[in-house]
Figure 1: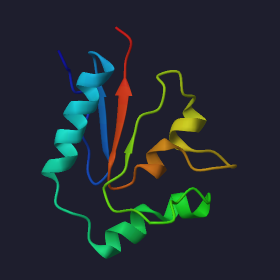
Figure 2 (figure 1 turned 120 degrees about the vertical axis):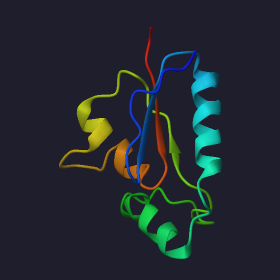
Figure 3 (figure 1 turned 135 degrees about the vertical axis):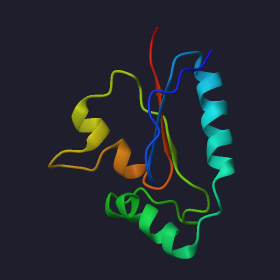
Figure 4 (figure 1 turned 30 degrees about the vertical axis):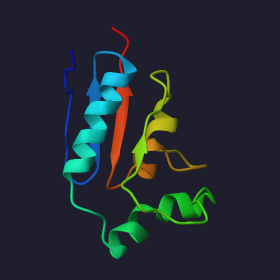
Length: 101
């Protein structure tokens, strides 16, 4: 059983209680319901990856989906002085938080 914790504006934060596969399937379905990314959105969504030199050579074709470990620190989740966090990397996409329950 999945229990959504929050869904917000342009970056979707999604928390779920259930197995990892269930949360990932639900998030993928939610991303598939969103319209395709325009070229401007692709540039905007890839800016954090480009700054950290993590952008793939073929660029970003689909909305980003990030799935950090549930023990990720606040700095890893939201960023710190050294690097952007998972929320920044998932801009215009989704973050799946699997909560142990």
